[in-house]
Image (cartoon, rainbow, N blue to C red; front, top):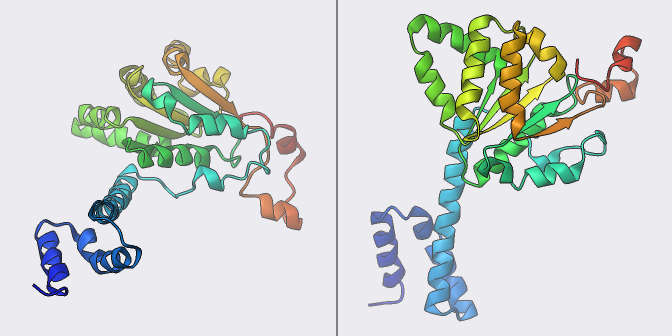
Length: 266
């Protein structure tokens, strides 16, 4: 059998086994193996590594799409210099994902635009890279879903969907008041995930305002009791990223009242 026939036969076999990446990289790795005098074991290891890397890339692309992130921003892209109230060390500790294995929660609190959602998404991307199922939903969107599901008799199905991922991100908690059905649904969701599945929440409301948000102080207290029992709270005080360039150019100057409250959730 000629030297050229061996790779061709290997390629056909790999393709028949649906090892497409190995087949695609066969020629290049054969050439490199001959040049560097690889052992058979080294050649096989490199060939398999290419297949694994390709499959991991495809898996990550699929799971990222299923996670429904509104945009992609990694923790490495976060501008800690612009937002010094966010301790990089604490975010790095969270990126280890130990909080997920313990079913703990992470809460990002602060005024609009300070980076709560990018940090939540950055942690979500870390979870996906580690092979942990992750799902993102804004609370305003969830309010619409719950209203529609209630009319269709599908609330149980929605609850099961949101209890399934290892990491659930609830974004923009507090931007709209919650009517009783939604408040009850959120309480049940957090109760069902308690100590079982990690939740990441972003909110512009301080905890003292959650009673008003839920229109029921008792319900809000019971929800917070479960949400905060095992949790890390990141309180962000700073200016809005979205207005950063306009501030620097002098196009936008915030009202004095906004500047006075920029350091606290509102």
